[in-house]
Length: 251
Length: 335
Ligand SMILES: Nc1ncnc2c1ncn2[C@@H]1O[C@H](COP(=O)(O)OP(=O)(O)OP(=O)(O)O)[C@@H](O)[C@H]1O
Ligand SMILES: [Mg+2]
Image 1 (tube, rainbow over the protein chains, first blue to last red):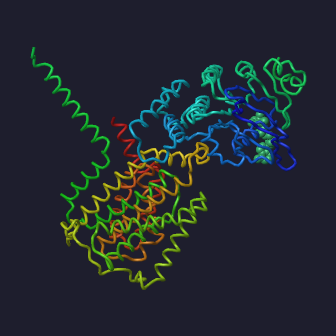
Image 2 (image 1 turned 90 degrees about the vertical axis):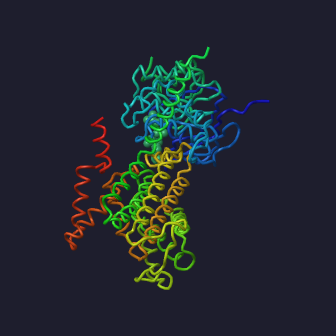
Image 3 (image 1 turned 30 degrees about the horizontal axis):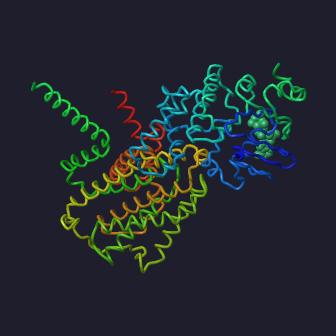
């Protein structure tokens, strides 16, 4: 028996008027696979993530999670099914503390966000989860700080903590390293490396050092079309990819 | 060996546990204790002003209901009086036609408020911002118009009166001096405060604060934001209805002015004055407003509202986090 891929996208198309932002995109992510999605600014990477997660409705094509077509599922349903993303632009709860941000995600992931009180078991479960996430992301000291008082780089890490608290099976990261310091990037890479083996990751990133270091394979998106998908070495040495994207930024 | 030390240590430990339990209880319930203390102290010195004090306490419950939605869920409203008035009419009609038990009357008021809160909230909470504000206003106006028209039920402009209320738990008769009404209102306020605090500190309360801060993101966490908003709207409407019922019981009259925009608007002023989103701010704001407007009205019966307006402008200018915010800052400065 063949295991269904964690995520499968088939013939996805999306037009914004005359702009064909996604053109017949097909790819799949095996369970636990770590894939990078690269491409020039405006190539349609974020739009693709929007369609996978349900923020944007594709013009045609299918998105399947563990073999189930989820094109008609709401955003919330997809999240509950384990399809989780982070945002290119931070999207957090500014007036809540770091702990409360993560707590809210951890509660929501377990369907406890509407309860008026928690059992002792649930309470300790949530506390342990928060503790674990904050310590992996190096945020323990900042736990009681309001997110609106955090530096940008730290907010990016809280964004990751929120995503992980949702217990993803497929994690879509939209430029997680943008605006991070070298040191924060190394925390990020360590966290991404330490993710549970079964989580499939699709990471959109312009930081090629991070991509080459972290990804098992790379897909290249140009003007809404998938130009190439291959191993890191294949894509790195591909002439066409160099011409349209890598050549201009990386040796 | 039977040395005395272990048991002595145990005693010390036990008393330490008991002490810390007491400290923790007092600190967890400090707001309720503070209100209780204030109620007792006022009773000792302010016997002549019990009627005014009861009004302030009932108003505090009403403003508390407003803080629950405005301060914690970000639902802006100018129609909260609809639920207060509905609760008042429901309790008045119940006393007039069905039964005189005050506690059941309170429940009737709360249920009536909740019902109308659910029916309107389910629809209007699909919008937000300015349109929501206008819709809350519209709902309240429609209800007031109905009350004005349905004179056979509501008594129209004359309102409801001439009903009596039985002693509370069959024990405490409502007296002319207003002592029973005073302690009755105080008890309901303290219980209401405790319930609100329980709600806002719960996971549900955290979800509300999340929705208030970033509704899109809350939805992306898998939180059904509309359901949460409707739920808190219903709870708030129930509490407002309860306050209305209480008002009907202790004043003995219900009028269409209980449904009016002025009641909604004033409550919003009180909440801003006291401090939004901290519960006790609602209590402080209501009490300060009721006392000041009573004083101002006796000094200058014509222009007192102007005075209140100036007060609000000053409050917003010099204490944007409300009186409660000022208190908190003072407390922090003094350690
Ligand atoms: N809602 C929209 N309506 C119309 N055009 C849009 C919309 N959203 C995005 N676009 C356009 O679609 C194209 C792709 O945008 P997208 O944000 O997906 O690119 P991207 O690959 O994520 O770029 P970047 O690397 O800068 O983040 C851009 O030209 C953008 O202007
Ligand atoms: Mg993008």
